Length: 106
Image (tube, rainbow, N blue to C red; front, side):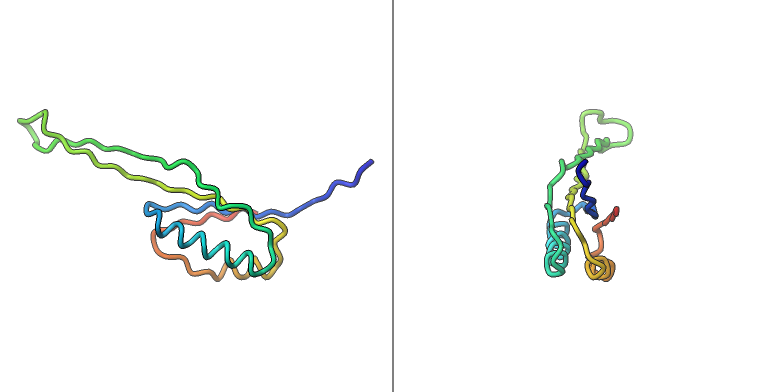
């Protein structure tokens, strides 16, 4: 029988409407994780979700006059392998810009 090696892993999902803010937040997370000697996999860009909304310009008369708006949701995935207690502590104290959502799963 072979001994099964158990490795701990943290999966971080980062979401934002602005890709520049998202990339800045991802850089901070990767720098903190690599400075604390944890192994970092990623950032992996996930497909951008585009939601398009079409509205009439006029309320009643012109059916042909329409405007389209879109919302783009950008996502990145980061895996941190073999994190230490220091890594977790530094990740909890990180300052992320407004408009960026982070979900951490251990």
